[in-house]
Image (cartoon, rainbow, N blue to C red; front, side, top):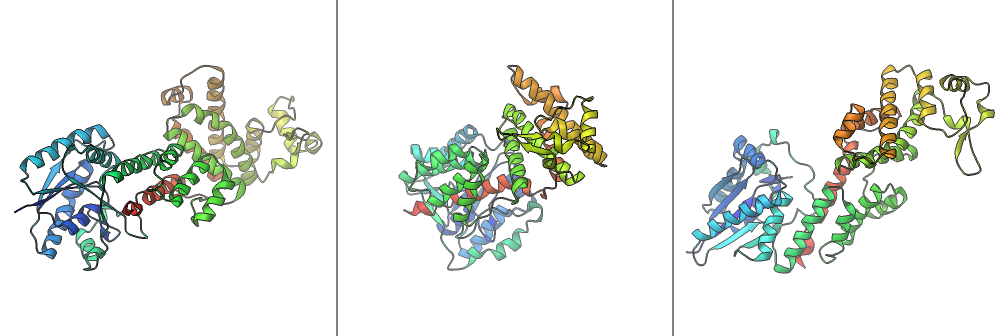
Length: 446
């Protein structure tokens, strides 16, 4: 008698998430395999040891459908870097080859290409495209109207409760399994590439690939990626226009100057994440100037514009007539040893005013640190041909790039920008929304 076998990597949405089947369990529910091979990385092994959640749910499903399902776990405790494609490609080839050796004529091998990391999915997709082995690749779309954004805390994961509450246990459950056909496999592989680029903040590359598979990516999804492109360019007008069309809110700080400052800081942090340290350094100068101005206003109640004018070239300069006779003018003269000149308005001029009028010693220390950092490394990077690395920044300043950014975050709060810890993660949240939408796969039914 022919048998049906399932090979499934295990991912963060397995076995149940948001009270719906994860991909592995959903495929088991539809295809009722005789045997299931579960592939677990080091992280997934920890969850397995905690509560046996993956095997438990298969056993409960087996009881429900009245069919015995054999489960074999393939443990990979050494797999901690789960984003390396080559590792999985070779490992999966060996596993599937061994499974096929044990299969008889008429047996069917199903492979879950929806669970696991992007590298796992890509490896299985390439194997399916090359048709080296005879298996049926099955995708599972996310539940209609839902996404996989909010993961359950693994410490609080009560597998028995989740099984009882699983909405897919209903007799008329929505079948979300999709048998990927040859033409769709390339699209699925490109979708995984899009998700990889989005998660690494390379939105232009993601948008370019999306344009290659118009039949599989909706215009709304492409618009979301384009929003990310324009957001990283700090093009707020275009972003707002596109967001209004999508009826979605991705921008945590709304008010004019504060939004510009915060979005600029977020873009600067992405420079660090992408290892673009020279761009990060160059970006410090305008940020520290704007921060100094807002801090002076919020902490010292001094609006520097009250002492400035716009010259005929559209540049802001100090106005001697407005400064004369003021305590601010005297402070600036003392700072520059009597040689203060009403030139450009910048950090160098505003920090002495903060030192004079603020009573917050911690603030004064932090802003001095960021000013010293900015001046030291900016001048070096601007006047020498150097390779700007994390080590170079640490050597020249005594701070890592992440420590410098922590200073920026502190000063942004002091500048009066009301932000939460979650707001600093808004790019990653945006990425999750884009990836969830792109991986909806409803268009693969075409």
